[in-house]
Length: 347
Length: 288
Image (tube, rainbow over all chains, first blue to last red; front, side, top):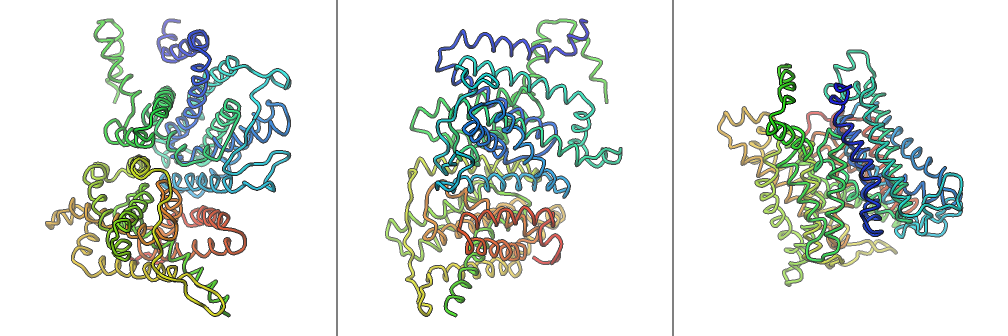
C-alpha cells in the first residue's frame, strides 16, 4: 500500500489539491473572484487538451483555438435552438473531434512534418476566423440563431441541470462543474497515458519510424489523439460560452491560439500539471494587465513567450520537479533521497 | 474586350501581390530554414514607416520604396542578433520565438500609433481601359513585384554576397572552413528578408490601409504561399503565387473577397496534402 501511494504520489497530490480547491475556493472567494476563477479553470481544461496532443503526442498544433471556438459556437447554436444545455455540450465535443479527425486524416496520412502541421492548423483557424467574421447578415443563421458575424452570439443560456432547462446553474454550481470537469479530464488523460495507447503515443513522439517498425500504426494513433484533444478543447469552448453567455469570432483568433501555446511554454511542454498552472498564471496576468492602460497586453504576452523560448525552454514545471523537489528532499535528509538513488544508474 | 483586359489585370494583380508579400518570407525560409511568424508584423512596420515618412512630407516615392526596406532591414538585423541567432537549427523554437515577437510588435505598434487606421495616399491616378477604369497603382504593384523578384534573383545569382549566402546555406561548416564568416552571412540574409518584407509593406500600404493588427491578414497568405512553394525560394514563390493567386481571384470574382481568401486557404491545405514538400519539392527541384 505504501509503495503504491509512493509511486503515485503526484497523482494523489493533484487529486487532493483539486478537491481542496473545489471545496475551498467557493468559501474563500467573493462572487466576482469566483467567476474569474471559473474562467481560469476553463482555460486550464483548454491547456490540458493541447498539453496532451503537443506534450505527449508531439503534434504541433498552432491553431488550437479552432476547436475551442467551434465548441463554443456549437454550444451557443445548440442551446439557443434546443433550450436545453445537455445535448449541445455533447455536440460541442463531437464537432471539434470530427474536425480534428478530418484534419488529422489530411495531415498525418500525408505524413507531413510537424512544422507543416503547425502551418495547416494555423491556416484552418484563419479560415474559421474569416468565415465567421463575415456572417454578419440576417441570412446567416443555423436554425433560429443568427451567427452575427463579428458581433458574435449574445444571450447564450448558462448550463442547466441535465435535461431540465428550468433549473439553471448558479455561479457556484458552474464553478463546481468546471472544476470537476478539470479534475476528470486530468485523471482521464493520466489513465490514457498509462494504457497501451498512451505508451505507444509517447513512443511515436520519441521516434515515429521505430514505432512503425514494431508494427504500430503511428498515423492512426496520432489521429485518435488529435481527435481526443479536439474534443477536450471543444468542451472547454462550450463551457466558456456557457460561462460568458456569449461567443464571438475572437475565440478563433490567432492571438487566442498563441495564448494556449504560451500557457504550455510557461508551464512546461511534456507535463499535464505545468500547462494548468501556466494557464492560470497567464490568464491572471492578462486579466490584471487589462485594467491598466500603459502597457498593451500583447507586449507582455509576446515578451513572456520570447523569454521562455530563449531562457526557460522547458517551462516552470520541470524546474520544480527536477530541481526544487530533490533540493527540498535533500534538505530534510530523509531516506527518500537514498531510495531514489539507484534509479539514476539506469542508462 | 475591355472587360476581359480588366479582369486579366485583376488576376495578375492578385498573383503579384501574393508574390510580393511572400518573397521576403520565402528567402528567409528557403535559405535559412526559418519560418518567421513575425513576417506580417515586419510588413506592417514597413507600412508604418511609409506612413510616418509621408506625414513628414517626404517625397511619396521615397516614403514607399526607400524608407520601409531600410527601416525594417535594420530592425531585422537587430532581431537576428538578439533573438534568432540563438535558435538556428531548432525550427519549432524559431516559430514560437517569432510568434512571441509578432505579438510584441503588434503590442508596441498599438501603444505608439493607437488602434486606428493610418492612410498612405496612392500616388498614381486611375487609368482608362476603354469604358472602364483600372487602378494605376495596381499596375505599379505588378511592376514592383516583378522588379523585386528579378532583383532577388540578381542578388542571389550574380553578386559575391549571393554566392557566399548560397554556399553557406548548402553547407555551413564547409563555408566556414573556407573562411566565410557564416554568422555574418546569416545576419545579412535575415536582414535582407526583413528588408523585402518592409518593401512589401511600403508598397502595399496605400492599398490595404495601415493598422497594428493587419499583419495577421498578411501572414496567413504569405505563409502558405511559401510552404506551398517548397524549398526553392524564387521559383516556389512564383509558382505558388500563381496557383493560389488564381484560385483567390477566381473565388473572389464568383462570390466575394472573404470566400476568395477561404478558397485560397482550402486550396493550400489540399495542395500540401498532395505535395507535402511543396511545388518545388516535386517539380523544378534544381531551381533557385
